[in-house]
Length: 369
Ligand code: SF4
Image (cartoon, rainbow, N blue to C red):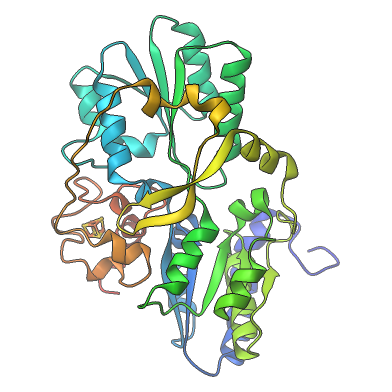
């Protein structure tokens, strides 16, 4: 432990005794029911993995937010990706999770099985390298993610321009957290009273965007990390703020997050991208919630390079992912959960992704909650 009472090593953030101590504090503070949303799917998985939801007092309900990038990528974008990947002389690159996400008719794995050149990369910079090595092919990167992946997506575009590559493009699909918080808090069915903000997003963006949201909707927001001790500390701070009717923003992840965030990363995003309206799968269009390429970089936009034309999407009639991503329902309330829809045979993106709420419920046995 440091002299500030925080663990010195990562293992300390998984120390059961420390976690139980914070749970005891939460129980001592809470006087009424509160509904909190953890925004990030990585946090949802950690909560399920360590059974934190089951340790909390019954007054605290955690609902799972839209912070799974694979889950919220619009069906039209996935269908566009599938169309591009099917074209001859195209190498389509993507993070691995996207390959199993169902489009209207198939997924990227099916395109690969049918002979398409679909490759998993761990960074868009790998896709730029593939473009350098395959000048006779068009190389496209599926640029999904939140503010966490936007800087490296921007770097890939800048790098491609520096190298003079004319065979590299991205399918822009980045989305932003604050507009989604506005959409959730202003929706008529909203029941969220406090947010655990995603620590990794705030490591990039800081948390200067959040105080106006907390004030406008009278909803406290606490920047929260991903280890069990981080999560229960974030919950404790949110409960304290709610009990004291203080609608503020606090940082429970100060070992990684500052108020200003990473200025270099934010400048890269600003240089390459501009705000655009974006459709979120299952939720609908949220104004100024996505990143599109600025005029100067539009030559790297795959939707302009390929004549994709009209795409008619068709969503599963059974999947209730939209309600789950808005915190209106739990995965186990979906009639297909664990029967028609499993990780082996997913009907919707939340059952595919390593950050999807349905996959977390399935993996950690939350079938009746
Ligand atoms: S369990 Fe499957 S069908 Fe149901 S909401 Fe989740 S992804 Fe959709």
